[in-house]
Length: 620
Image (tube, rainbow, N blue to C red):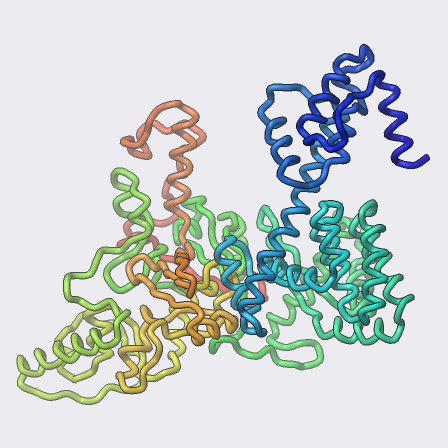
């Protein structure tokens, strides 16, 4: 029985059919069908099919259908179950239709920016505007270009009968085929894909491509092998997916090895086979990080001047067990305090100068170890350090910094009546002895009086690299999550050989950028400024759009206190804006007492962050 016959049978079973002209607007046809349904004694809210449902099922994906769905959303009428199913399906058709409309606009934008660089920069700008990842924006851009060359697929998407994901599968599968072969496979796939799932369509496409052009299929496979990669995808509860796109035979090799390692479990091993596979997979790479080399003797190269390690940032109170604020696993995000303490057991501790989210250089930036612990909670205490005095440079303007340092050195020279030795091309140790400026060393002045770390060369020193990568954690382009250790260090104000290097290669004029976004900044596709006090970077595009990137938080103590207090207020129903945290909080909200370390020892001016690296390859 055809679909038309089945629809007619269903309609006839409901009694009198709605009588409206065929060309009437969908709203009029829908209301007439609904009246006919309600007039039928057999109709009920549990009806599996109705004339109104049939009208929605046949409606085109357009503005009229959208208006109908909006009207049905207001809750003034109660649809039957069959109609509800069709309303859901109609919403899906509209989403598909809008994806096609979006592709049309993206393609027009690409036409105005011809060339590979236009594609790349359009991807970056759309990622900013849509507040999405570069990968997601690249998918939108690639889809637009592909649909422009696949009219049958584009029409199916615009009609709403093919999802964007299915359209992507079809265009990707036929990308390497000749025009005639591609068109034939696309027409076949459009019909097949309308009623089949994505995995079913993928298998059908594989068979169709192999059948229509075996030689081209082999060439396409060689190109696909060149796109092999490994990616990470964060999951909840401190978990993460690691996925690899590999040739099928290589994937079989990996899984066979992992499955073999996990096959035999001891009698008292309570792990499932899936858990043993995961542990065996992890163990291979833990051993590589622990030894610094593969089984075959290939040495793991240094990154940013250091051997690759997994890093965690945690405050001393959390490490001591006195607080339960989340720690930060670099490259992933927040993890529980208990997890951080377990990892720290075998880790190496490195004290960091950053005690909060704010930048250094003008006083402590710690979390609420000071004001928040002693009085009213102000989340800005965690974010902003004290402002610099008027006229004191923050290192973001090299020429201003040069003038200030030279003036300071001249003042010291006149005061002491002496000259000064030249500085070495190394970072200078922190000092508060301003008389040391008499040695004529700009780096000494910058560290001792401005609190700024710099070096007198274009390439940052190891100390400066560690400082900036630890501060930034990821690429500073909005939305980009490439880890800092894989990034390049960028001079925010471009390096000028005519200006002393020590005034440019300074922590407040450096940021981490991945190679892609570093190149975009170099080509002036984007411009960027960084506020040294807040750590916020502001990006501007050629179209005039402005985007900001907040600094990464490595200390979540303030957030923890704030949310617990808000939860207490919700629980009690009282306004606690002017209540101290320790003023009779609910019993389950009481913070643990300090007992392992004296607070005065661990909070000299804010919590001290600890960077933990584990020589066994574990995060700590």
